[in-house]
View 1: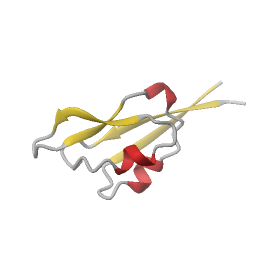
View 2: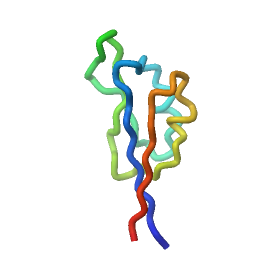
View 3: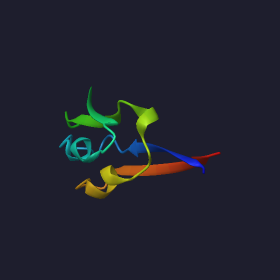
View 4: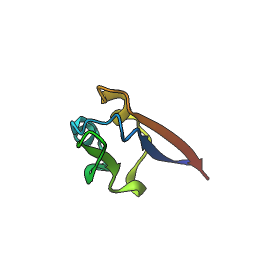
Length: 75
């Protein structure tokens, strides 16, 4: 069976740092970074990218739809 690896892309300038995506991630992949965007908000980032399974829970729960999830199969 093929393994699926996920990755996310966050629109940093639109992220308001609410942290809902961090709380919704079942694999503890996300965290809020020390880096801030132009509005002064911390942005979501992948703290543990190898654990991402591409479930898209973060993208579904994001109130501003700033997260895009990509999934790739590995044999």
